[in-house]
Image 1 (cartoon, rainbow, N blue to C red):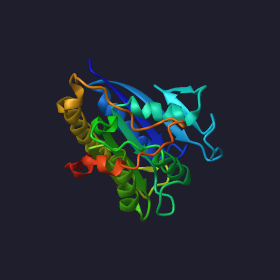
Image 2 (image 1 turned 90 degrees about the vertical axis):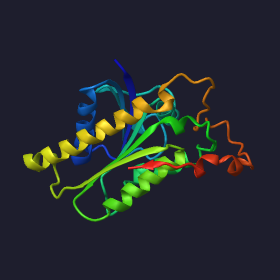
Image 3 (image 1 turned 45 degrees about the vertical axis):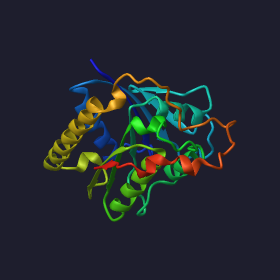
Image 4 (image 1 turned 90 degrees about the horizontal axis):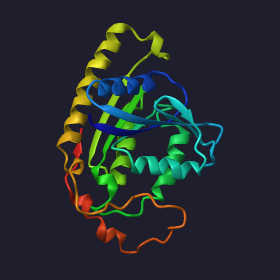
Length: 234
């Protein structure tokens, strides 16, 4: 059976509506394929990128990586097939922790060319809110995934006026589950039909560099040929 590696970054440690929407997606994928899931919960109390910056759950088992946390996270992103950014809307914006992480990864993504490993991945943005700002945050997160070089980006958003997932009525949960099930099928179709799932003859170069590779190529803009490609934004 096919094994799909999934990396999920949550903008908060609170397991509410956004978290449960992600779990619905994972359960839908498990019906068809085997998945290896790494979940990263950004901690509010650790703004510096130390070993305790986030708690990592690998297949529902908590793990605290021994290496530098940000390097472990970027390595997980490089090795994943599906990258999910999940964040609720907080004051019409994403959480401060997720924004800081994306800003940090901005300076690590220096290689912008068609051979980037990120071109072959699938991106997904999931967000919920009880008020305004849903469209803004999903577009913002989508732009970050596009900036990394991901060609296929999906979005799922839902306005839920309940603060807790337990307060959401069964009819609404059924509608959400139906939409997420269709979304999971779209993701699987792209994964199975994409060229990156086949054997390739050249070695991809990681988009994320370690802290010692801090020399910026002055001609890197000329290599950004992928910006002229057509992306599938769903």
